[in-house]
Each structure stands twice: as structure tokens, then as C-alpha cells.
Length: 130
Image 1 (cartoon, one colour):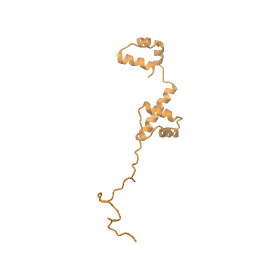
Image 2 (cartoon, helix red, strand yellow):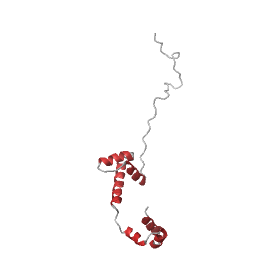
Image 3 (cartoon, rainbow, N blue to C red):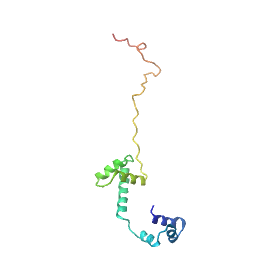
Image 4 (cartoon, rainbow, N blue to C red):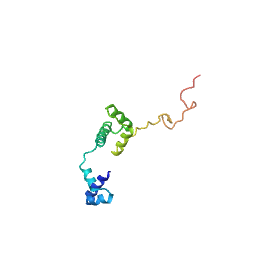
């Protein structure tokens, strides 16, 4: 949160005037009013567009893609963006990919049919090969 956004929130939440909040934070009121009427910077606009694109890609993957795969999708779509930037945007939006299901080992203990029998050459109903 920027200083100017904090000053605005103090007015909305606590009824503190802008002048008092500016004085307490050591900021001139003219700077605050200049900030409130200013359109977003090109970087802020691009970051907002990137956040929308990341959210769309995350939703399209049903929440399974992490930052590396979303980065690859965005780069294929023409975005110049790094994995770390996508990870930061995902963190800001609290987007967390679901982890892959781990495959369970199926070669563990094999139970014989019947469950209680122990199999050996002595108890087998088949005669041994000669």
C-alpha cells in the first residue's frame, strides 16, 4: 500500500482529515492531492493487465498451473514476462496451484488370494515340476 493510499484509507476508516494524516506522515498535502488526481503510470497499467492475464490463465487451467507454466503460456501469447514476476503477481492475488497427485507405489506387499493363506511349494495344490 502506498503512502497516499494509506492517507485515503485513514479518512475512510477513522474520519481523520487528509491534512492531519499528511502532517503525521511528513508528507505535504499538495503532494497527496497531486497523487489523487493522477492517472496510473504505464508500469501500473501493465501490471494490472498482467494480473488479469495471469488470473485468466490460472482459471483456464482449473487452478493447476503454477508460475512456470503460466509464464510459458503468457510468453506464447506475446507477453515479455519472467517467472518471478508471474510468481509475484500470483502471490499478490493469493493464487496457489494445486499440487500434482503423487502416484502410490503399487509394487509393495502383494497379498495372496484368500488373504490368510501362506503360499509355498509344500502347500501348493499343484505338484512340483520335475
